[in-house]
Length: 242
Image (cartoon, rainbow, N blue to C red; front, side):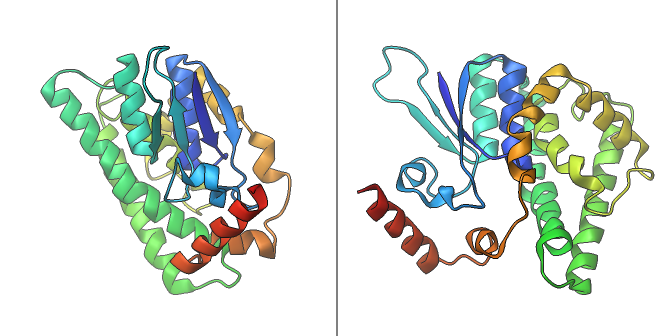
């Protein structure tokens, strides 16, 4: 059994999709990041960076202790190795998939995330930030489009690189970036969206995030955190549990 700590965001979707693609048994443990659940002591014990997703896996009945994992890339790699799926075993194929996985983690995700913040969450529009991150997101989609030219998927066969990248292309409309100039990305995006496991993974908790507007308290929980504020929230959460 895998306990899956999740909220419906692009990084959360990576793992919900992977779990469905692999057909693994799991239980969803919602972590409402707009309410501050990510600062609860129990969750911090698993994910000290106070971010979703995270998993706790009991790989077999005789295991001495469970496997606790945070960071979506590490979880994808773990699940791929656990199941023997979506990661090539030959040296060159494995290296190609891993470099594109880290390309998403270091580039596509952070740039899209910053662009989303300044377009959709910032209480004032800062044109320099929107332009800076918008151009970088556009550039990265161009890199992806070039990689997909002549390939069905990023590295030939469907892999954890595709599973990592697709959720960060999904919000392209909210990021004011149509896919018209990226025909290979559009084809790839549509093909993945049609996969039954992707549809199932995307359906998990689909109503949670959209059920309310992000209020001022939610903004405080999500943005502008410091070491001191995170520590104080964790301390308060522990006192409540006690």
